[in-house]
Image (cartoon, rainbow, N blue to C red; front, side):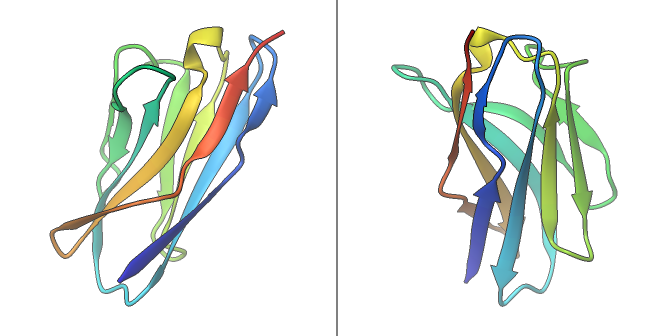
Length: 115
């Protein structure tokens, strides 16, 4: 089993920045893709971006140029740096990791962008 613990959410004004972290623990042998999703009230969960074990990244068009995903394989941790935040970025953010072909989810962390 793999456990994921997220941190870093909160309230920020439009144009501000936040950094989310997601640390994996447990019987970890090999984590491949790590990623972030988000779910706004009344909407479906959507992909924010992913990062492969080698560091290749993919971003949704809505966050491209503003968000950056990185990872520290030695710490089994993935990060989401969010800059120039907009009210429409308000959502619960979830990390997801693939471990031995199985996906695991974090508990979610609330990000609220409001003045």
